Image (cartoon, rainbow, N blue to C red; front, side, top):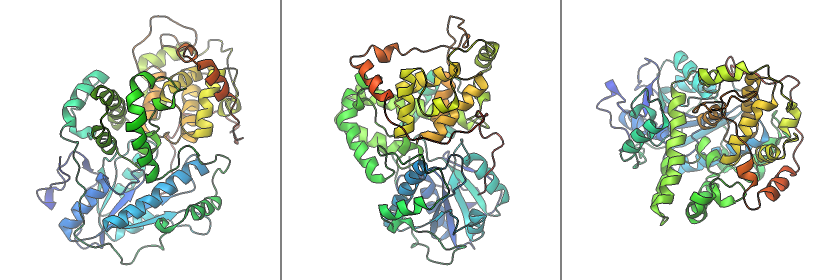
Amino acid sequence: MTSFLPASLANWPEHPRVRRLNEGPIGSGGRYVLCWLQQALRARDNPVIDAAVRLGNELGLPVLVYHGLREDYPFASDRLHRFILGASRDLAIGCGQRGLACVQYVDRAEKREKGLVYRLAVDAAALMLEDQPAFVAQWQAERVAAKTGAAVFAVNAACLVPPAALDQGVGTTSAFRRRHEKARELWWFWSDEEPAVGPYDGPLAYKPDRLGGLSDAALDGLLASLAIDHALAPSAMLPGSRDEVLVRLGRLTREVLPAYAEARNNASRPEGASTLSPYLHFGVVGPREVMAAIKASDVAEGSQQKFADELLTWREWFHYKARAMRVPESYVRVPNWARGQLERHAADPRPELETLGALVHGETRDETWNACQKQYLVDGWMHNNLRMYWAKRIIAMTPDPHIGWATACYLNDRLSLDGRDPSTYGNLAWAFGDAAPGYRDNPIYGLVQTRTDRSIRERPGGPEWLSKAAARPVPRLIVPEHLPEDPYVSEKLPI
């Protein structure tokens, strides 16, 4: 499907990837079309930028791409900040190569800007932002749209097939798979919109940061100056950059896909995982580009299809479901029957209770769980097969299911580079019972299915791998005195 083809500005846009958030006018008197990015940190194959360019071309205006990074978002740390800063730097470089102006703002003590998105929007003919259904992006977009005079549009950049292009009200994964597979053929192709107007070089509402010209040492120096959690170091395994995306796409086609069917459930085999999820979460790469690399490879079609099912069916199913939820990261998303089962057993004895400190640092009495947790703590990522065991065991290691859910979200969101995402919240919901009931009424879990570590331990080399993984040295983090609560229901952050 081609990019954006509105019949006229009066009904712009007519495209399932874009939805209008307010009734503000599209103002031809603006200086630019503002494109505010939060997670889609890539310059190409980016529907948010392309929507802005298309509208800018219609109006004869340039596009101004803006990305800001605050100190006070939940769980701000060296790990998350450094990944984002690296991705934002490459975003700026890529925008420059496309002929687009890109400005940034890094919140810090010597440079505080209030209401910056609103101030930039004053000079904008329209504002394009991301249609993200989880974490803080959803309510931020709604608040900006309510307080901005110009037209505000939300653009889906996370999915190959935008959720609005599918039948609404699909209730099962199998039904979603059937509809999604039929729709994919319309969405493989994407052509970047070329700007008809040169880069914006006029006045701005603030003195911008320009990360595109900064070295790694300069980014590290900037990071060190910020009031964030410095104990959680950047991931050596997962640097935030477009170069790393290209390396992983090459590895995907050469090493991962040929062995994917047999290795994907074995955490001890590195060729069983693409490790692309952090780059998809922060939009350094999109699913279309991943699939284009797979389709261009000579890997057998069966292997391609298996990976596509994980990337497109399951990931986009979770995005589709989150779109209909007010707070996708809340415990209330767990099905009523599962919450009923867990709460019916909430008072059951819990002999495996652990402190939050032991959970954070992977120092529980469960060696397998510790091996899982230390992937999060050290690497900022966990093998998908381990996540299922990790999440289900938290239910028994915490005082009640509400605290269990909040603890799982806390660990996921604070430590993982692909946390705070519809996919990871969907996986957590699956662990807490968003699946078929089991047949045995177990203590603590009721009919919510349990999971053992047998499949991990019985693999060749499994016990040795677990022992080594559980013994990894870890950083010491500050752990809250109080147990986590259901996240972000009332959390409000400045824009």
